[in-house]
Image 1: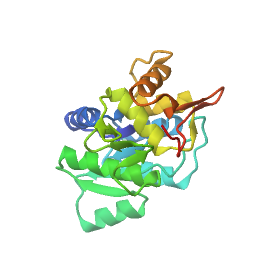
Image 2 (image 1 turned 30 degrees about the vertical axis):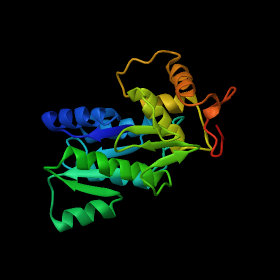
Image 3 (image 1 turned 60 degrees about the vertical axis):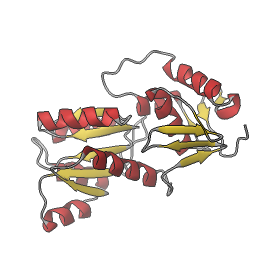
Length: 230
C-alpha cells in the first residue's frame, strides 16, 4: 500500500518513513502543506499521515481542501482518501477540530510505530469496505499485521512487493486494476520500477499459489475474481 506522510520534522519524518517501509508500505514524504497538496493532486494514496503544524500551508488547511473538492486526475484520486492526523496538539479542542475537518483518526505525539501501522491498516481496511482484519479469497488467507500468507493452511513465502501486490488485489477482489494503478500502490517516488515489474510479480504469485489466481484482462489490467476456485 502506498501512503503519503506529511511531516516537517526531519528526524521524525525519516523515522516514520523507515518504520512504515519496514511494515511493507510504499511511502512518499512531504515536508510542507503546499507540497502535500501538490502530491495529492497527482497521485493516489491508500492513506495520508498528516501533521498539523506545517510550513507554507497548515495541515488543517490541507485536510479541509482535500475534503471540500473532488480532484479529477488520471490516478482517480478523490476526497475519500483516509487521513490520520499525527500531531503534538493534544487538547480535546484540537482533536475535535481535526476530526470535524474530515480526519478519520487522530494520534498524538509521541507515539508507538506499531500503533501507527495498526491504525493505518484499520483505515485502509475500512476504506476498502472490509471489516475483518484477515483477508480471505479461495483458500488464500492474508494477515496484514503479521505480514503472513497461508494457502490451504500452509505458509507461503512472498517478497515484500509480492505481498503488497497480493494485498492490493485481495482488497479489490472482483475489480479490474490497471498496471498503472498497481504500480502506484507498490512504488513510492524515487523507487526504480522495471517496465515489466508488475507482470513479473504476478507471474511469481501465480506460480507460488495457483495459475488461475489472477486473470489478465487484455488491454485493461488484472483481476482477482471473488470466487475463483483453485
